Image (cartoon, rainbow, N blue to C red; front, top):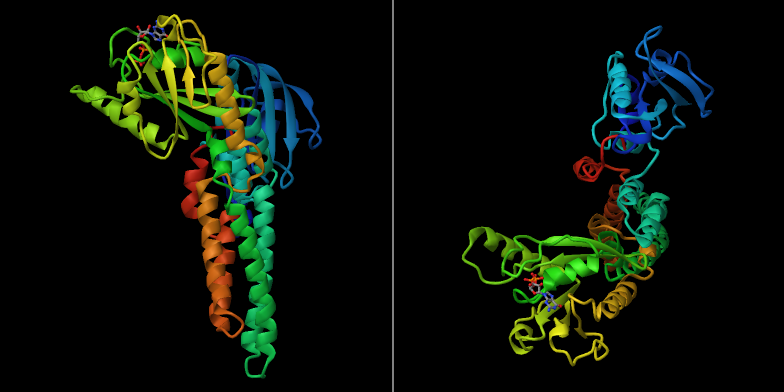
Length: 455
Ligand code: GDP
């Protein structure tokens, strides 16, 4: 589909890479894709199997050479393979030396070279096996950390947005054809009106449908990226201690001296399947130290972009000072009074949703804080996996579609067909860019950059 890339495939390099995780591991998967994949199987395993059937083979460094390992081998002739090209797969023992020996043997075969990051997926895209939104879904699936993120990524990979965008584009092409037919008939009296009317109706309906899909409070993106919760407040309030307690592992340095947290430390939490990223912004304060200043600046930026701020104060010092300095940006702020163990009298029970009392030292009040965060994450992200839009790229493209359709609709039944036709064409083009059906060279590098080698 894309610029006749199917024909280019024939004289392409054959690529290979370790596709499984870091050795040593039980099994390592090494994949080969391209015209010489069959040669790779013949050279190392001495044979090629029936397509898509697992076989067992001794791998040799060359025909008749030394045995490297015994392996499960698979053969997927194109175009019905993951990349659309001929693919060979070797499942070898996952030791460093085994993997190195097999990769070296592959590298000696004429026409084979190591794959670049994301190159298998890029070929799958170029050969029409995946559209661009599915490629993004695949990247998200690999990076998904929680259940809701996995569901979201899987839907995206399965084509929820891609199919919808293609269906919309199909309708636009039909509408455009109607209008263009009208332009051709324009010498013949009232034909254009009859054609323009239905085309405008399609434009209006699509505009409303896409506008509704965009009105999702960015839930899809938030789920994909995780809800960002910044822990901020005056020095020594116990922010790092609190983060450590919440993360249940030692991530931040806890020290009795102020200003030791030089950067933003983040901890990813899975709260009931929803992703929450906690940021320790202990550096938010005035400083003379240039290194710390940079930490402060970054801390401020992250805190300002957060969905929620936990403003931590030392309950023993009194609430006035810290509370008054609480950030007043866009994010919701919860006040967290820490060190209640020092007060003796106060119990964590006397808290409300936005004012909590805890002790990072004893752990008092933390179950309540975690429960409140989990409720907040659920309220903010529930249902987000069904959101069509999961990335800014999608939002930008769909906004442009809506704008073009708005302009078409504004022309009205008495309007100029050539303008309507042009706007419909623009809208269709944006949808084509969304799925990668039309010139998207500029966005490809950005998208494939997210991939690791072997994917
Ligand atoms: P930060 O500068 O806000 O990150 O504060 P730290 O987490 O480094 O804590 C500052 C000091 O307060 C350290 O000596 C901690 O041990 C102490 N601290 C933190 N939380 C508590 C608490 O809940 N109770 C008591 N008694 N001390 C705490």
